[in-house]
Length: 197
Image 1 (cartoon, rainbow, N blue to C red):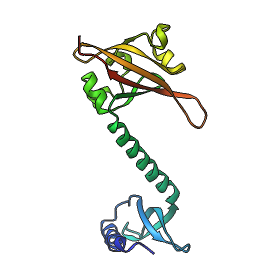
Image 2 (image 1 turned 60 degrees about the vertical axis):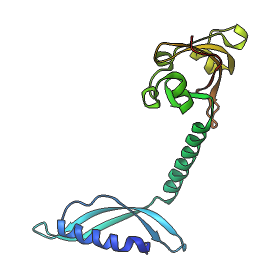
Image 3 (image 1 turned 90 degrees about the vertical axis):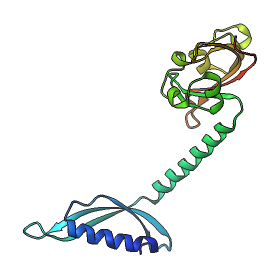
Image 4 (image 1 turned 45 degrees about the vertical axis):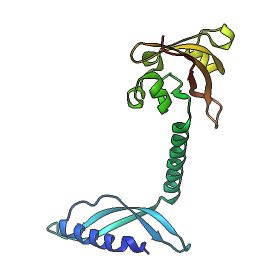
């Protein structure tokens, strides 16, 4: 049984389909099944035609996609929550993948760097936000390789979009895949410590 709000829409769509005779697209419907719950189905349809190509009916194959739909919705909710959390952080946050390509920045990072999030996404961090630093007690020059290997913190100079040099306190940490422990990127937090030079 279809959900009440989908019955009229489904009937109208079927009548329109029969009148047009066009190849029908895949549709998604919530159907009340024997378990006593609504399940989500993708419905694959093809026209049954009489001689002369006039539509006589529709063949349908139903695929239960409830778990997939629920998992996708949960992933979206989690993603939205994480985005909201990133927006709330006062310090500049920059997340890259393991190749140093920027995947996410928060508004504080936009203000600090002079670049918008849209401009930064997909760019190599070394190209758009060169950082000159000697973190970890001044023993190693900060590089993507160092950031991928161990957490680091120290003072740095960030070169902004306007080519201004800004002194910042920087902390970086490898992002580890929770399933296999592999390094999937770097999280960097930057805090301005003095005025533009």
